[in-house]
Length: 116
Image (cartoon, rainbow, N blue to C red; front, side, top):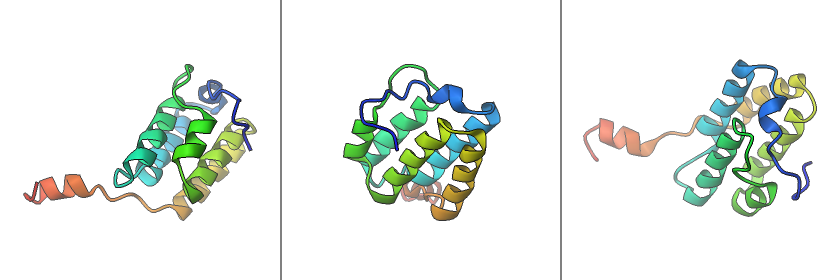
């Protein structure tokens, strides 16, 4: 698992290609970041940005303080996979899609139904 003092600026370089990065970012965005948990969502979205940026957007310590339980474990596993192998990233992606359902955007649905 990543240490709290290791910067995450190397993450964008760990993907096989842009498609693999897009797939992983889609899982983080669609399955982990839930705006019903605003603080957690904010840090997961900062992590989402970190996956494409070489500057420090978020630290492991900030993720540990603001993301809980299974989601934190999934993010830490992803960081390790990115630093290990492209196959590990593919395995993470497949496991995360099985473990986390797509987050329903209740605000969008309310506006679309004329309630907002």
